[in-house]
Length: 503
Figure (tube, rainbow, N blue to C red):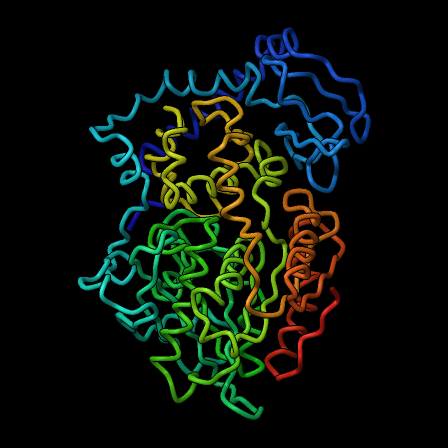
């Protein structure tokens, strides 16, 4: 099992980052940033202006509290240390940014990449095995299997029962054939929770697909790993206290919890997640045809879980059309539907650790990113960071490291490669195969409500029955206040009530 607490590489990178932050904010860095950049008027919200970067670019002074753009609608990449929605000079493009790679390079040697370097780099940046073939091994004959074909099942009820708050009849894990983002053979793992509560309604027991926010890079961070092995240093405790599974059990629903980042732990990549979810549904129905072969299905996801839900609903019609009539709705909140926007609101502030982790996760499926990574980025990607879970990755945001400091080109987040990734992950040309309930905190600064509203408008334009709700609060309060309404909407769909539309 990977050492979640680090070994040498993780602490070395973190210490080097911390040293570079201290150095980069000194007088020399500040003077350089102000000497050759163009000063901007004091026009930002709250009266906080900004200065140009050393290159005379990268400002975000007149920021917006809704989407991180300038007040004139121009996107900018600088962020403040907390919210990223009104900003200072872009640290990545100032002298501060140039300090970071050099400072780390003086403390940690350049990785030795034997030819071919990009293939070696990609292999080295993939998550380490956890020592369990269920999660680690690509089985023989995988290319010849049908998508959703069950490879293996196992009973984890004795361990999982102690972690689930509702009454449990059975908890089984499945490993099914799936595909990666390019359609190559892969596999997915998932856990099916069948409650002891009887289903009182007509027809077969419904299934709620609970796409929990994994937000991690290591295989030990998945919900199925926790439900199989119990609490470990890698456990995401947020998945244990979120109310979705318990509420579903109380109503007699079965709950399918998918490890939607796939075996490469491609955090942030919606195609892998969508394939994993739909193939896990296929596997569940083929493995338990009498109980779930004709069940109504609904999905829920928040934050990182909504990335997975977003991918799944937009792939139903093309990837799993036979499920379309039985997937009756999907609710998603705090939706990171527009990664270009997140580059302005999450980069280089307290949310920056998760933003960088998602960039590494997406690069595991999109290798065109790898040539843009500099020596510092390679050090980070090859270190034990590649196996870290959400808590550690989130905490690393306190260092304020911007994505540009890990790139070997200027304006990396505005590059052609980045634009292609934004378009691919937004999936704007695809139509949801099921009705949608979309919600977001109105005061959300990291994943702004504007992105969720744009997704609502986009899918209304495609003719999807959709509802949008904006609730008070930022990211965490937004889930607490928005989840009950989302669950009530899902409840109605699983009872067979037609989905309303507010388009």
